[in-house]
Length: 269
Image (cartoon, rainbow, N blue to C red; front, side, top):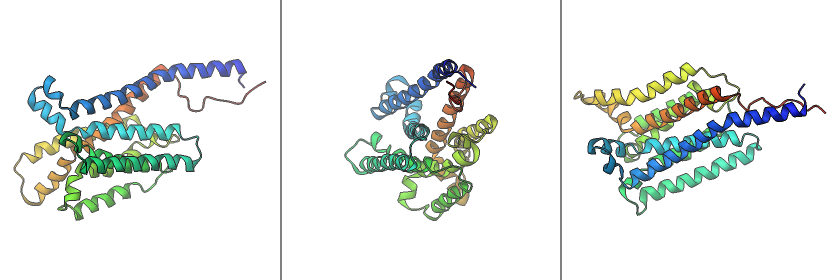
């Protein structure tokens, strides 16, 4: 049993240990926003070699996808104590907003560098709804299978082709959040850091392997199989950035002190 003074001291200790993680989260938001602005106005060409600047600008959705997904996860964690209906309404409102922004970017009078961010907005709209679903989702991987079938059936349509980054991110999300790294959205699940690291490495390496294979002069069905995921590189790296961020933040939290979860005990007069 803890005294009131012990409980107060414990809360102060938890608050102090949580500060580095909070600052890291704020820093992540700021970094993603700054990178988005830099790429939108093409400032990267002033500081990077042209070949590297061009490659980075072509993959700008990486940072937008990561920003929107981390924001959704953090919102879910902070709204966990709210009644379910209110949390769902928040996620639905944000999803509608992102959907509207996506259509504005797609058809509105904006520059090409800004227009290309519509894929991240559409992916973010769906993922904000998905992140807020009750956990655990035992058969979440079926959603990835269904989306993969949709891509295969609609492969030659302009919608599926132009939204490759969005579709790849959506296909990966159920595997990321409800198969491999369940601890992100389900606090009761004891997460293996090595499984998270292995998945992170896979997300980083798959696009690189696809780039190498694509240059081998493939033809026919093999070339088509490699082509689509290669177009969705931003989906792979965007999700990798999410897992990398939480891997770093969880490690930082473990070094600085105990987690907030489960600290409070019964009050003693």
